[in-house]
Image (tube, rainbow, N blue to C red; front, side, top):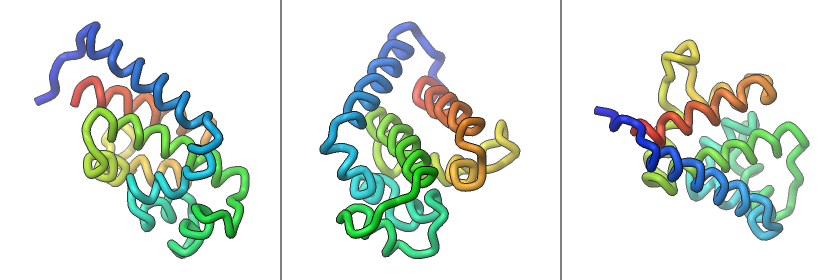
Amino acid sequence: MPVPATRESNLLVQWLIIDCHRSLKSPAACDNKCENMSELLGPKLVAYIADVRETRAVRQWSTGERDGRGPIQRRLRLALQVATLIAQYDNASVARAWFQGLNPQRDDRSAARLLREGDLDEVGPQILSAARAFVIGG
Protein backbone atom coordinates (compact mmCIF):
# COMPACT_ATOMS: atom_id res chain seq x y z
CA MET A 1 0.00 0.00 0.00
CA PRO A 2 1.54 3.34 -1.03
CA VAL A 3 2.55 5.72 1.70
CA PRO A 4 0.88 9.15 1.37
CA ALA A 5 3.26 11.85 0.19
CA THR A 6 4.37 14.22 2.89
CA ARG A 7 6.34 17.40 2.71
CA GLU A 8 9.37 15.48 4.02
CA SER A 9 9.08 12.77 1.35
CA ASN A 10 8.73 15.42 -1.37
CA LEU A 11 11.87 17.16 -0.08
CA LEU A 12 13.73 13.85 0.00
CA VAL A 13 12.79 13.15 -3.63
CA GLN A 14 13.89 16.63 -4.69
CA TRP A 15 17.21 16.14 -2.90
CA LEU A 16 17.71 12.74 -4.57
CA ILE A 17 16.97 14.23 -8.01
CA ILE A 18 19.38 17.14 -7.48
CA ASP A 19 22.08 14.81 -6.14
CA CYS A 20 21.63 12.43 -9.05
CA HIS A 21 21.70 15.27 -11.59
CA ARG A 22 24.91 16.68 -10.08
CA SER A 23 26.63 13.31 -10.07
CA LEU A 24 25.75 12.74 -13.74
CA LYS A 25 27.38 16.04 -14.69
CA SER A 26 30.77 15.02 -13.33
CA PRO A 27 33.22 13.84 -16.01
CA ALA A 28 33.90 10.55 -14.25
CA ALA A 29 30.19 9.71 -14.14
CA CYS A 30 29.77 10.53 -17.83
CA ASP A 31 32.70 8.29 -18.75
CA ASN A 32 31.25 5.40 -16.78
CA LYS A 33 27.53 5.84 -17.46
CA CYS A 34 27.21 2.64 -19.52
CA GLU A 35 29.08 0.68 -16.88
CA ASN A 36 26.84 2.16 -14.16
CA MET A 37 23.76 1.39 -16.26
CA SER A 38 24.87 -2.22 -16.71
CA GLU A 39 25.35 -2.57 -12.96
CA LEU A 40 21.96 -1.05 -12.17
CA LEU A 41 19.78 -2.44 -14.94
CA GLY A 42 21.78 -5.25 -16.49
CA PRO A 43 23.34 -5.22 -19.96
CA LYS A 44 20.31 -6.74 -21.72
CA LEU A 45 17.96 -4.04 -20.48
CA VAL A 46 20.49 -1.31 -21.33
CA ALA A 47 20.84 -2.74 -24.84
CA TYR A 48 17.05 -2.83 -25.17
CA ILE A 49 16.69 0.82 -24.07
CA ALA A 50 19.48 1.85 -26.45
CA ASP A 51 17.79 -0.10 -29.27
CA VAL A 52 20.84 -2.21 -30.08
CA ARG A 53 20.77 -5.94 -30.73
CA GLU A 54 23.83 -7.02 -28.78
CA THR A 55 25.05 -6.49 -25.25
CA ARG A 56 28.53 -6.29 -26.78
CA ALA A 57 27.70 -2.70 -27.79
CA VAL A 58 26.98 -1.83 -24.15
CA ARG A 59 30.32 -3.32 -23.07
CA GLN A 60 32.12 -1.44 -25.85
CA TRP A 61 30.49 1.85 -24.80
CA SER A 62 31.58 1.31 -21.21
CA THR A 63 35.20 0.61 -22.23
CA GLY A 64 35.33 3.47 -24.74
CA GLU A 65 35.83 1.18 -27.75
CA ARG A 66 32.64 2.48 -29.34
CA ASP A 67 30.71 5.75 -29.20
CA GLY A 68 26.95 5.88 -28.89
CA ARG A 69 25.08 8.20 -31.21
CA GLY A 70 23.40 11.34 -29.83
CA PRO A 71 19.89 9.86 -29.35
CA ILE A 72 21.34 6.80 -27.63
CA GLN A 73 23.34 8.96 -25.23
CA ARG A 74 20.27 11.05 -24.37
CA ARG A 75 18.13 7.95 -23.71
CA LEU A 76 20.83 6.34 -21.59
CA ARG A 77 21.47 9.54 -19.63
CA LEU A 78 17.78 9.81 -18.72
CA ALA A 79 17.57 6.10 -17.95
CA LEU A 80 20.59 6.37 -15.67
CA GLN A 81 19.11 9.38 -13.90
CA VAL A 82 15.83 7.54 -13.27
CA ALA A 83 17.51 4.25 -12.33
CA THR A 84 19.84 6.04 -9.90
CA LEU A 85 16.92 7.90 -8.33
CA ILE A 86 14.97 4.69 -7.74
CA ALA A 87 18.04 2.70 -6.64
CA GLN A 88 19.07 5.40 -4.14
CA TYR A 89 15.57 5.37 -2.70
CA ASP A 90 15.20 1.58 -2.80
CA ASN A 91 17.66 -0.71 -4.65
CA ALA A 92 18.85 -1.80 -8.10
CA SER A 93 16.42 -4.74 -8.28
CA VAL A 94 13.49 -2.42 -7.77
CA ALA A 95 14.87 -0.03 -10.42
CA ARG A 96 15.15 -2.94 -12.89
CA ALA A 97 11.62 -4.07 -12.14
CA TRP A 98 10.29 -0.52 -12.47
CA PHE A 99 11.80 -0.14 -15.95
CA GLN A 100 10.33 -3.44 -17.10
CA GLY A 101 6.94 -3.19 -15.41
CA LEU A 102 3.84 -2.23 -17.34
CA ASN A 103 2.42 1.16 -16.50
CA PRO A 104 -1.35 1.55 -16.92
CA GLN A 105 -0.97 5.33 -17.07
CA ARG A 106 1.23 4.91 -20.17
CA ASP A 107 -1.02 2.53 -22.15
CA ASP A 108 0.52 -0.50 -20.42
CA ARG A 109 3.96 0.19 -21.82
CA SER A 110 7.09 -0.12 -19.75
CA ALA A 111 9.46 2.79 -19.15
CA ALA A 112 12.13 0.85 -21.07
CA ARG A 113 9.86 0.56 -24.10
CA LEU A 114 8.88 4.22 -23.93
CA LEU A 115 12.55 5.22 -23.84
CA ARG A 116 13.39 2.91 -26.73
CA GLU A 117 10.50 3.79 -29.03
CA GLY A 118 9.27 7.21 -27.97
CA ASP A 119 10.30 10.74 -28.76
CA LEU A 120 12.54 11.59 -25.82
CA ASP A 121 11.29 15.19 -25.65
CA GLU A 122 7.78 13.81 -25.16
CA VAL A 123 8.30 10.68 -23.08
CA GLY A 124 11.29 11.88 -21.04
CA PRO A 125 9.27 14.19 -18.76
CA GLN A 126 6.58 11.52 -18.43
CA ILE A 127 9.11 8.90 -17.33
CA LEU A 128 10.79 11.27 -14.87
CA SER A 129 7.40 12.25 -13.46
CA ALA A 130 6.40 8.59 -13.07
CA ALA A 131 9.70 7.85 -11.29
CA ARG A 132 9.15 10.74 -8.88
CA ALA A 133 5.63 9.52 -8.18
CA PHE A 134 6.95 6.01 -7.59
CA VAL A 135 9.60 7.19 -5.15
CA ILE A 136 7.12 9.36 -3.27
CA GLY A 137 4.34 6.79 -3.22
CA GLY A 138 6.32 3.57 -3.13
